[in-house]
Length: 141
Length: 110
Image: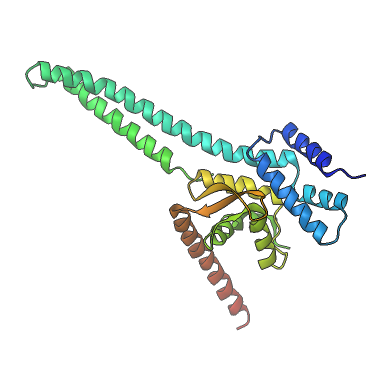
C-alpha cells in the first residue's frame, strides 16, 4: 500500500543527503512536490505514479544542490567584497584620524609626514568606498 | 522542444515578465510557462528555485511566505524596482535578437 507521507519523508532524506538545506529551500521544494503530485492525481494518475512523476520533475538532488551552490557562491563573493571594502575604509580612517589630530595639535598647520599620512589615508578610504560600492552593485552570477 | 541553453537563458526574462503581472509562486510560474509555450518550454521544476533565489539575492525580486485560500503555505515572489529595470533591458535585447533573425529570415525569401 502506497504511503504518501512515508514516500515524502524518504524523498526529503535523499534531498538532505545531497546537501539541500532545510527549511529553505527544502520546504519550498516539498510544497512544489505535493502540488505537482496533486495535479497528476487530478489528471488521472494513481498516487504512486503521480508521486514518481512529481519527484522526477523536481529533479536529481545532486544536480539541484550544485545549482543552489552556484547562487550561494555568488552571494558569498558579494559579501566578501563588501567586507573587504569596509576593512580597507577602516585602515584608511586609522591613517586619517591621527594625521588630523596632529594637524590640530600643530595649530592647524600641516607638516610633511602627517600630510602624507592624511592624503594616503584619503586615497585608501576612497578605494575602500569604491570596493564597497562594487560589492553592493555586483549582480552577475 | 526548446534547446536546453535557450531554456536557461530565457528563464530570467520569463520569470521577470510573469511577475510583472503580479506576485506568484514556483509551481504556478512553471505551469504558466508550460501553458504559454504549448509545453515546448519545459524546465526541470526544481531548477526554478535556484534561479528564483539567485534573482532574490541580486535584488530583482522579493519573497514572502503566505497561506493560500486552501490553507497551503506558499512562498510568493514579486518584482522589485531593479527587477523592472532588468526586465526592460531583457525585452530590449531579446527584441533586437528577434528583429535581426526575422530580417535575415525575410531576406532568404527575396
